[in-house]
Structure formats: C-alpha cells, structure tokens
Image 1 (cartoon, rainbow, N blue to C red):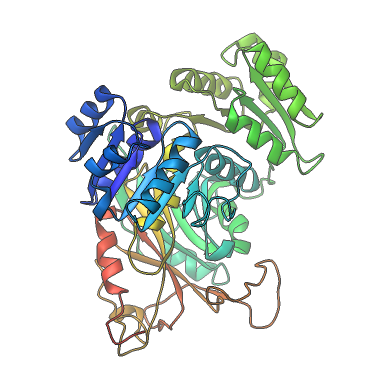
Image 2 (cartoon, one colour):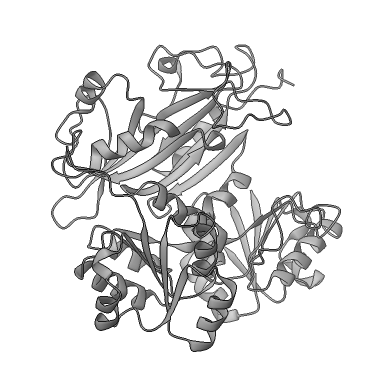
Amino acid sequence: MKIIILGAGRVGYSVAESLVSERNDITVIDTDAARLRDLEGRFDLRGVVGSGIDPQVLAEAGAADTDLLIACAALDETNLVCCKLGQLLFNIPTRIARVRSSSFGADDVVLGKDGLGADAIICPEASLTRYIGKLTEYPEALQVREFAGGRACLASVRARMGAAAVGLRIGELRLHNPEMGLRIVAIYRRFADEPDRFVRCDGSTLIEPGDEVFILSAKENLPEILAAMHRPAGQPARPVRRIMMAGGGRVSQRLAAQLAQEPGRFHIKILEMNPQRCMELAASLPEDVLVLQGDATDEDLLDDESIEDVDLFLALTNDDENNIMACLLAKRLGATRVLALINRRTYADLMHGTQIDIALSPAQAMLGELLAHVRRGDVQAVHSLRRGVAEALEIVARGDRKSSRVVGRRVEELKLPPEVHIGLIVRGLPEQGEHAADPSETVAGEPQVIIPRSHTVIESNDHVVFFLPNKRLVQDVEKLFRVSATFF
C-alpha cells in the first residue's frame, strides 16, 4: 500500500514506524528537513520537505497514485485542507485527518466527502481518554480493548501470587471453571534481566506470578476473570474512586470532564504548575474537580493531598522524565496504581515491569484506529499491543464454503500459523447498515460470544477476533479470510 503521512512530529513518527515495518511504501511530508533526515536514517521511507497544503509538494510526494493519506500535522486546519486537496486534485481513495478540536464528531457532515474531505478523523487525546477511562472501570487491568461493538473485550492483567487462577495450568483453569468463558491468548514472562518474552499458550501452560496475561472474553465476564488473575482470594474489590492527575493539559481536561459526568462517583484532583492554566481549568471543569497549583514531583505536596489514599495516579504532562519521576514518587508514597504518559518508545520499554504499573504512549493508544483503515479485507477493529509489536484483530467471515476458505470449516481445519490464536467469535451481529441492538439489552436472538474449540464451525458474518504476537502474521490472516471472485 502506498501511504503519504503529513507531519513528522510525535504522532507522525509513531505512525511511520508502525506502517513501514509492514512493507508499505511510505512518504512523509514535513517543513522540517532535519526531522525528515532523522526519519529517513531510521526507517525505509522517503521524506519530502514542504507544506502539505501545497499541491506541488503533494504531487512530488506521489499523491496521484497514493492509496491512503494520513494528515497528522500540528494544526487541524492544515490537516483538513490537505485532505480536501487530496480528494479534489488527486482523488486519493482514503483520507484521514488528525483533529484535536472536540467540536467535530467522527460522523460530522462538515468533515465528510461533501465537506472538508476527511473519510475519518483521529484524535490522540480522545483515544487516551477512552483508554484511561477503561482503567477506571476495571481496576485490575493494565489495558482493556473492545471488539464487536463492546460485546467482547481483550484485557491484559498482571498475575499476582494468591489469586485463584495463578499457579494453575490453563487446562485446569478451564476444567475447574467451565462457566467462566475466556480464552488466554498470550502470556509475557520476564526471565532474569531479559525483556518480557512471549509464552505460547496451550492447556499445559502454567500461569505464574508476575506474568502479564492477555485474555479475551465476553464483556460481562471480564470483572470476574480479572479478579481471578489479580486479586488474592477473599480480598474485596477496590473500585477506583480517588484519582489524581499530574498536568493540566488537553488529556487531563478531557478525562476530568468525562469522569465528572457521573456526579459523586470519583474524587478528582489535578496538579498543574501554570497558574493561568489552573484558572482556565477551574473555570471550564465541574465544581467537584479540584484544581491545585503545584509540582507533582513535590513530595510534601503529595503528602498533604493524601497520595496514600489515591486509587489511580496519572502523570499526563508533556515531559516524559517528569511523568516517570512523579509516578515513581507517587507509588513510593502509597498510590495504589500509577500510569505514566511516555512519548519516547525507549523510555516506555525501560519502564515496563518496574514500579510504574502502566507506561502509555499517546500514539500507541490511537494507532489501532489508523490500522483499521490500512488492513485489507473486512477488518472491523484493530488494536496495537505491546508497544506496536503485537496486534489484536477483528475480521468478518464472508461468503460460503465455495468462495471462502474459512466459512463452513472447523477451526482445526483453518490453515493458520501456529503462533496465531483465534480468541473468540461473535455470532449474530447485524450487518452494516442494519439497526444494531444495544449491547446491554438482553433479548432473544441477541449476538453470542463464543469461545471456539477445535470443532467449532465458522459461519458467514461471524466476527472472529485474533491475537497475533507479531504483526508480520497479519497478512496470513487477511489472505485466509479473503473471498474468491465468485463471491459478490
């Protein structure tokens, strides 16, 4: 696939890094020649110096035969104008714009083909807000990703000594808890001082303390499953109530506004150094969000604000080092769980498995939304995992036994690489364009979440969720689900 990326900043860099590893033909446009030289030195791509709203620059970048335009420059206006030029002058089939403004919705007619020319919009701040919001719903989880309109979830959790499922083999877990519908698709285990290593899962695999376990299940089963992996038997659940945020930027503001929509559920404090920004936040956020001027690496301030009672500490500033130090200090002073926003991938890798519970990259949080447009076939959702190395993929089975290599066949008959896990199947979802039932409704004929066995037969319109420990396996899955020319 031929792709043009506008902008070589943090988001553009991460997008280029992810897509170039999949043998795409990538061209990056930016006004900063030094940034482009750095990208060209690191990755197999081409840089074009210039403005993305200059038709000559787009032509030089190869817009005439480009498949996908991703406009992720710093300014919304630049991205939207670039998409419109890509539509009108070069007829680029798919155009995606990064839009920071919360005034636009994903289906806003102003943005579409008859408006500003963007087929889809992405907002890293909104993606981060959704990501962190899930962590308040599921306190034991390191991350939670949704599939099939929220009916199924992929979660990762740190296995703890004393939890009911830890110390069991996966086969024993299924045997003792047949009603607990889950599929363990991957375990990452630390050996001595080495980075976490992927452990392929089968019935004989032992769940050990300290493992990072990836689980697929129906949404309603997830709290019980996470508790069995993380919470010692008999210990009561501790929901997230008290939240402290370091930094008063866009992410903190969005997140605080979202959480405050449930009055009385959360006690939220924001620590911000800039007094002017503190006043802006206090004026724009609900009264029950407390905004304090101060430094999140100030031990006395954290003590005064009862950091030991905080359920979730979020370091969300633009400074990686400050976020890391604030989290380490908060954890030492008693915060239950800490999350650091880290832009540099090397820093995120170093922090993994330390006292920082979650090291989150802004670009990685939204990368899946982009990948869904890059993936071929009837891909519905993509989530980038393990800092871009692994991937979870939801793809729809189409056709019949004659035109498809999967429909009408048992799982054991599918010619998949041995590392690829079919995690679950969601059956009975309405076709696109039909009225989709509310996933919370429980009515006859509602979609089923199926944990597949070797004898399970794939049916047409099944939504199949895979876990792939390496992105290079994506092409094998896409090829398998491709229908032949006899299917219309």
